[in-house]
Length: 82
Image 1 (tube, one colour):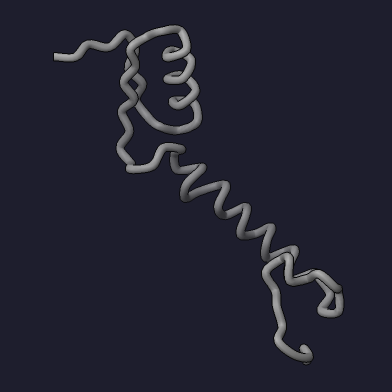
Image 2 (image 1 turned 30 degrees about the vertical axis):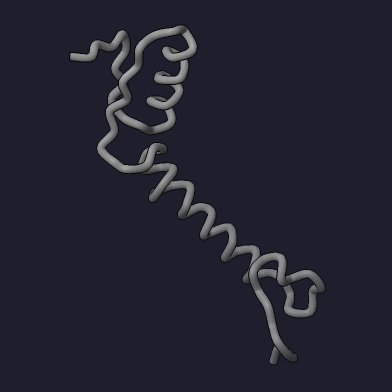
């Protein structure tokens, strides 16, 4: 049976930092997470993705159609825009 010096429950930002800090101090670390990806709900599905979507929508909706370089924000037109 494997033994650990430090067990972290949760792979969110705080859990990742705690596990990394313990590992840097030469501790045997186990990180227990219920999801496939690390990062937690705020990073993967909650706050950050929704804020990114909101900000992108705000930028693209307020960018005038005639502005050169608008395609850098994901808006492209193949011809004249009505």
